[in-house]
Image 1 (cartoon, helix red, strand yellow):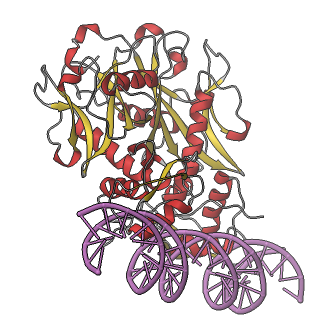
Image 2 (cartoon, rainbow over the protein chains, first blue to last red):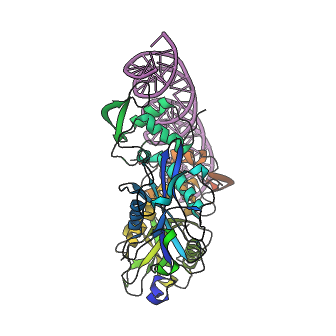
Image 3 (cartoon, rainbow over the protein chains, first blue to last red):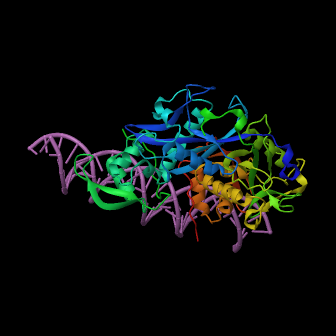
Length: 232
Length: 232
DNA sequence: TGAATAGTGTCTCTAAGACACTATAAA
DNA sequence: TTTATAGTGTCTTAGAGACACTATTCA
């Protein structure tokens, strides 16, 4: 059926929702923001936060709104991950869900929002039996995040405003699940033009010799990229 | 609004469609499959092929079905490009569209399908004033295709079953819009493990010394990747 | 034979990984 | 002084681009 030959009356009704894969690095683990479902179906199961797209807002705006409601934070990186539209992914009705990926620094706690009571950070390695098709969506989100760390500056989204090279390296090690040579990592990230900007300050919060503090540079795409490669 | 707190009755009604960015290399140009609209709005304008998702099929299946209807060909590479959900992108009603990217070899003609009469291949450089937000979708599709040629074997999707290195190079040159050194290109593509498989045959259809014929190898991800880089 | 395209070899340069070595703090 | 972490330098190797050179066809 082409655009040419449809009339507004013959479209099948769908519900459209957004689901959020919100990731952060906490402790030694990559964590996702999950909410505990209070109602059937999947009552008591963990699920991705999300909700309906309103009639008067764009799908992207709905994602931004939901992210604010769930985390209490705005200005996070947010990008479309994919759209999930199997006929029976929600047993009650035909729901098409547009999933988004957000990367957050280690927020104090799954904050505020009307529904915050049931929300918390869960290490992705310990996640099991999510509601609906959310396990697949979460998996796609984690894989996207891993890939984007290679060729974009998004790793810094997991850090605070100011951070050391070691803190950034820890992000890479935890998200990728590998060990990285501190010396080569340092040379690489400080060598990529526009990735990091030195503040001139330093900190000894990591112990040992004080480390220089950096802020995000303006660059989005890293060249050369930071390729994933394991170390014994 | 969370999943927890909704009931099937209070969802706003949406129409969900799929739009297809079908690309091919024809002559010396990257071309997109477009259809001429026969009805308002945007009557007479070019638009991307597409149509409604049916209630009983997945969104991905709808894309496959529409692609078959438009090109008469199945088995093409097809991937989600993104979802476009601005409130007034269709002036008549609230429509959320999931866009897909397909790469096709140079098909005889925008073939078959009920609506083929109005369909044709249009060089993307000459496209202007598409209906709805289709110009943006097409642009996103072209950019995605350019990027994917770097690190996947999808360039071969533009070629026939058997092809020469020169034919594959022409695909890269046209899609990227740059000139590539034939000698370095040859060394690179034949050096990437699993990318190309020699048939043992050769052809002189390009003139000059006969060129070896290749088939697609099994590999999807190219390592090392073919990086975009211009030549005088 | 000459023009055209296919394909190989070689040089240089960049960047990655391995790892020795120096620097600066706290206990 | 020892220990821990920060940061630099150096060696080796892989791969990219430039480009000379050989190979095989047709007109």
